[in-house]
Amino acid sequence: MAFWFASRAAGVLALVLLTGTVVIGVSGAVRYASPRWPRFVLALLHRNLALLTVAFLVLHVSTAVLDGYAGIRWIDTVVPFVSGYEPFWLGLGVVAAELFLAMVVTSLLRPWVGLRTWRAVHWAAYVSWPVAVIHGLGIGGQDTRTPWILALTLGCVALLLGAAGWRLRAVMHPRAVNRAGAVR
Image (cartoon, rainbow, N blue to C red):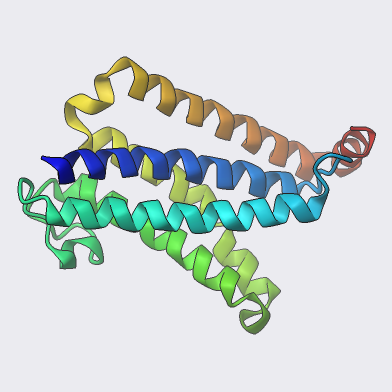
């Protein structure tokens, strides 16, 4: 039972941390800076949150495998849609995790993979995050219907929609966003 609780908790924390990582990543992409939050601080926070997300993702996956209830095998954690337990929902989690890990690995290897490759893989964040949310909502069972999990998930969705709007505005009107960031 402890592994089951640990897996759920680690999954929720991974979602919150992934949301923070993406939102802070967007702030770097739009070149936001302020006297209290210079860009190098945001970049370091982004990197460290991503690495912390990896830690909770590994905990989430490991405890799900160690919990004997669902019968998730290690192979189910790397090959999507083959599990005997909730193959579709678990498969989405595998896809989201692999996209996220690809972003982390290419970021750690950025000097060797080149900016163009790094950027192409990094765009996977915009796919990984919603797939992770759908995985959590689909596989979570009764947990996802509790008010605090729903509120937390909706809060993450609202934050990410706001960040996506900010990013889109930066693409559409780069001068307006840069001026707004410089004023702050």
